[in-house]
Length: 113
Length: 113
Figure 1: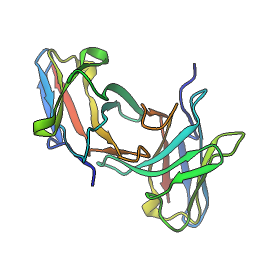
Figure 2: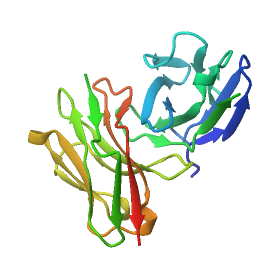
Figure 3: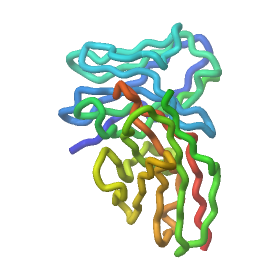
């Protein structure tokens, strides 16, 4: 029973490039959450998706960031025109239903040069 | 607004000693509370959760936590710490909408021989 899978584990981008982070939830889970962790800080909520729907994106920056969770395939967090301040660890979590245990992936560590 | 406070940024204990990590929450109703542990470079692993019922909850790896409504606290305890417990510990509360977790800033635990 595979857990939440995130790839890549590490991603290096130059300023202005695009970053695509992928997340495959646990089998049977249809709720996906994205969080960002800056150094020495806790996790901050970004977005909550169900299959083909964005439920809550209140934590997502208004510009350059987008997320999707298509009917088939992994959830994608996309960051356009990355800046140094985007350097962080991005974690994906999934749950079987809302208000439930969230299971976390190992994260993608994004470094912007 | 919901929030979680972990007053201790860093704690050092001797192996075999007891441990208590503090967590205070701000919430408008009965909270759903969690403790997660994060090893360096890894994702978050669930230690235990409180949804309702018995206010003393048991988790994995010998951890327990006690929910005290009067003190708005959910402190994590372990009677005897092992060197492998060295990690970052996060307390979290589910938002009232159920769409996201609010995390504390974490407590870093160091275990000395």
